[in-house]
Image (tube, rainbow, N blue to C red; front, side, top):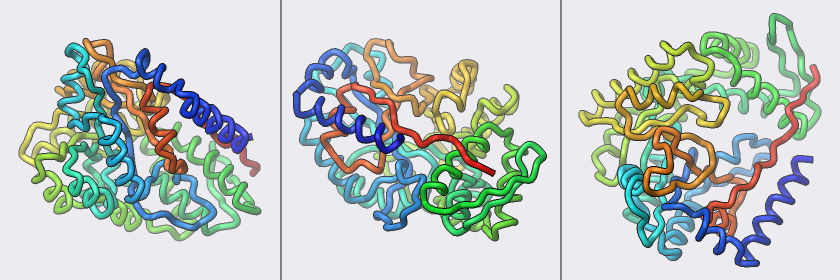
Length: 350
């Protein structure tokens, strides 16, 4: 069913492109511009099981994207300028702002050479526990163990559960089921669950998380570039909806304070961890404003409108699906057209 949905979604987007409908939509729904959300940038892999592939692009595709944005006459602007255009009269040209979530090391190794060669600005939303080696990239650890194992055991709701995995399709189903469950847990329960899983299946969570993340030397090199905006994404990257209000406020305030101390500059922009509708609540918008952030970015798709029509503390972003390699599809999305993403069924048999 998910593959059928993906096929239909692509067919709709192809039709919108070749019919020219996306151009008409852009005039009505294109807004002032778009904030693009990326996560990992690394060379393509051949593995059959890649549940996080949608969050990745290749350095080659990033290069093609920037070349295309310039060819399509978009202004590629820093996040400060994107926020300015959101509250002023519409400009004749639309903008694109490039942002990267998670503080992954491959942004430094694979994305930055491309971005600096093109001389374009971009922002990094940093969870500050990760450069300290204290963050826990549980979503990658889960991918790693399911990729290697044909049987997974863990405790869910105080019951021992065992999942037999017969093939790649079942691996995808199990990843979707377990990651969805983990996203509902409080940080202490999530940490207990992933540590228990990693111990059972011989995954070094600390080493894996450190290897994925930029360290402070990497970040200092980026911060020295005036084209780079360092922004905050809390300390530990929790889904804020799973925290008490006081804990959510602490995560926001401490993430900002650590980044400001490290880089000796005001940190003015924020991104909600994960950023989808289930990961933060309306009261978190007010918290972000109270913490002194000019903007707070989500992962909710949408375009940025001019003249204050977009709430900067619920800033929409378009997340590019790394399984797509078509610039045609990206141009359709930039027009403001939205399509429901295809998702695998969240079922697993224990």
